[in-house]
Image 1 (cartoon, rainbow over the protein chains, first blue to last red):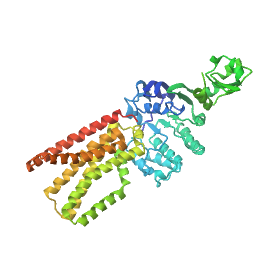
Image 2 (cartoon, chains in turn yellow, cyan):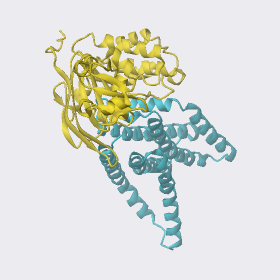
Image 3 (cartoon, rainbow over the protein chains, first blue to last red):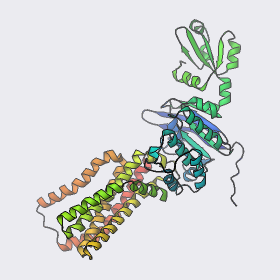
Length: 294
Length: 207
């Protein structure tokens, strides 16, 4: 009888503690995040902020300088193979040779993963309308991405790591792919780490959002809290100059109008009843952190 | 691990046209020259060339499809990935020798000791050649390592012509027999050493 792993509620699938990686021109500083089971974490940041570096460190593709990474409670270096049996990875580009067909990939991966499930793979191919007789190079970009996802899911992974998997796809294809992730997460023992700079995708599916900027994690928290708490205060430039700047995380000054990011929308509304304080989208929060003044 | 080896063989499946062309060229060459003794040496040279070309091609395909970045996310160690390339070299060289043997038998109905020695030499050169090339590919990638191929091919040629000019006495049969007897040990050492060097390069490689 096959015993199903018993997962304690809210077990952490992924934990990063003070992970550092130094390059001559870039440094990832004290990266920390926690991904509980049963959730999707959006990992946002501008290009070059350190998203891919963090993902490579999680997968032990590059060597960290300090800190530790725990996946399913195990060290990602010491128990690397055991962990990787249960991880599915999708990058922004297809990594299979263009002359391969979908069946070739199954033939390769069934010899790589102990838990490879041919019938599940076939089901995904059917669900995603991926023709088995076509070469991968004849697939569209969206089809290639779906094939990568099918091949990442067919060994029953518990953690799905996606690096810019929906970037470069049209909205319909992106929506299809997001549905796949939502479906995947129905099993509460699973989790998804999803790096993207398309914040609207994350607003739709993420439970947690981690924002990285210039190699530092600015925040890693529940999306609902984030959307609930953060706000954008709008006022004229002359009025803004009279306000206490310490109330704002970042601000942008135009010739006539100013916008400022506030951490607590309700408190800001109370303190500045004469100004407009709107909710902040992930896009606005990201833009403010990257482009705004302090 | 067999999955990775299978991937390399699937790459090679894409090349029958290239292989047929190459074989066709050699067969036409053989018919044109009409010299049966030429056949063996032609095929022996072909083995050396083909093994190296096919192994190099698998590296290029890996690079084009950005395979390594993905492979590192799979439950396979870097050492196993490296080992696959060495197994591939060994298998391709052996298959090459087998094909050459079959063709020789089919045409000549017999094999002389010289034929066997020649085939063994071809196998040996192919193994030695790949043992030098594989670590270079891992270290520098296929683009930069192409220059290394030129050097690896040209150096022995230059070396030989230098030796000729040095007016050293030609090796006697006894010398050659001694070298042949010693060569399996040399091949094993260079092949294993090359594997360890490649593994070390890969362990330190960050993609």
